[in-house]
Amino acid sequence: MGIFIAFGSGRMAPVFGAQIRGVGAGIVGLIIMMILAGIFGFIGVAVVAIDYNIVLGSTGGVEMDLGVKM
Image 1 (cartoon, one colour):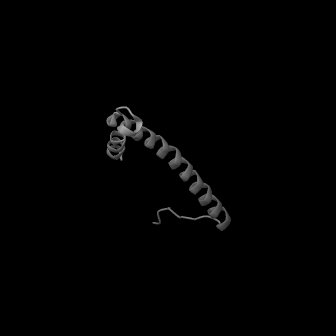
Image 2 (cartoon, rainbow, N blue to C red):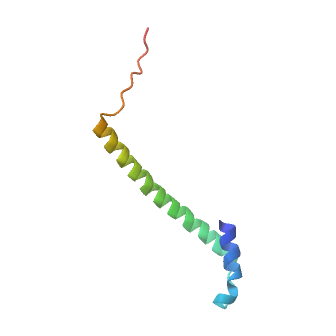
Image 3 (cartoon, helix red, strand yellow):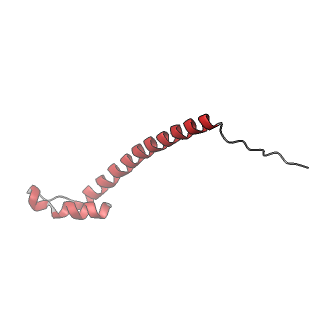
C-alpha cells in the first residue's frame, strides 16, 4: 500500500505545482494506516466482546468439565 501511495503522490507533482517526495508520503501513509488499523481494530474487538458477553449471558454460557477421571 505504501508503494501505491508513494507512486501516486509522486505523479501528482504537476497538480500541486511542487515536487512531492513519494517515499516520504509513503512512509507517512503507512504510519497513518497502522494507527488507524489499531484504533479500528480495538473498537471492532470491543464490539465483538460485548456482543459475545451479552449472548453468553442470556443463554447461560458454556460449561466444561476439565477434571481428570480415574
